[in-house]
Amino acid sequence: MRTTRRGWADEVTTITPVSAAEFRAQSEGRIPEAAQVADDVWCVPLEIAPGHMPFSLAYLVRDAAGDVHIIDPGYDVDANFHAVVETLRDIAGERARLASIVVTHLHPDHIGLAERLRAETGASICLHAVEQWALEAVVARASDPAGIRAGLAAWGVPEDRHEELVHAAVRAPFTAVRADVLVEDGAFLPIPGRRLRVRHTPGHTAGHICVVDDDEGLIYTGDHVLPTVTPGVGLAGPDGANPIDRYLSGLVDMRAFDDFVALPGHGYRFRGIAARAGQIARRHLGRTSEVARALEEEPDASVWEVASRLSWSRGWENLPPPHLTSALRQTEMHVRLVGDGRHEEMRTVWGEDEPHPRPSE
Image (cartoon, rainbow, N blue to C red):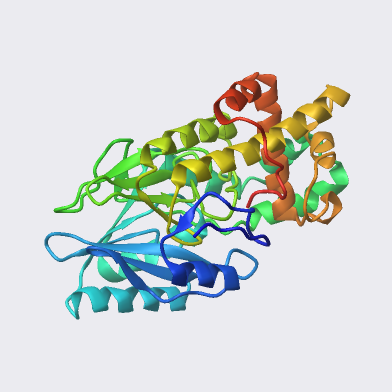
């Protein structure tokens, strides 16, 4: 079955859903039931705060000793905590032990429940080393209004818009979490009897990871590749590199996993990750082309001026503060991609651009 749908989603014609139940639930905006998805692997759909995607997907993995490990435990709300605990008990009984909490990236709909689960179970939290740094930087930035204003000024944001954007930034729902285990690219997670390999996939955030199970042909993608949404890029503050450049390069690497089943952080499990990665890349390059045209018309335009000339599904004037800040940050990345000449290089890799219908979220 191939999919084509709109709304929250891109028009998707490149992938095959693995679970009809997950696909229907995503299409209808409701949360599906937890289910076993492979030997000793279970998927637990979890609630997300209103205004976001319908749900996130957590994954429970049982090791050779009978202990359980969770990948991306989701938002910190009671319903999610109970859903995880109930599935854990269904898997391993009343003596079930949660041994580790693996987090693909720092966003609250992925890391939010980690601290509570650690406190309740003693499980260790595992993050990429760069993501630990990024999380600390994001939390620190939220307590630095002066630094936020300086960034807005550098983008050319009119002064009468500063206060609302600063207010939104300092209210961002990030919580300081100190991981027990920091991993690097290529490391194997401490899960007895299973070879789950870390693959650093920066872009969405600086320390984002995918987790590869070569033996079972599974790849846990977090928000690196999603089945129906073009993931936003650089959603954790600056890291010295250009996140969109790193993201596009990382999407090329997904071609190696086209025979794998993708287990994403949102949507539904699917096959066809190489084609989906290509579609996402072309959507982002479509935005870069739009930025390039704006700069041809006015080479010295500020980031604010360039962004105001781009197409936004909500309309530029209707973007709420958090989405406006994201739009400006991502516009800056595309401006840099054009300036570095990387846009044309990436077009030779991915082919013709596709329209970018909405700001990535």
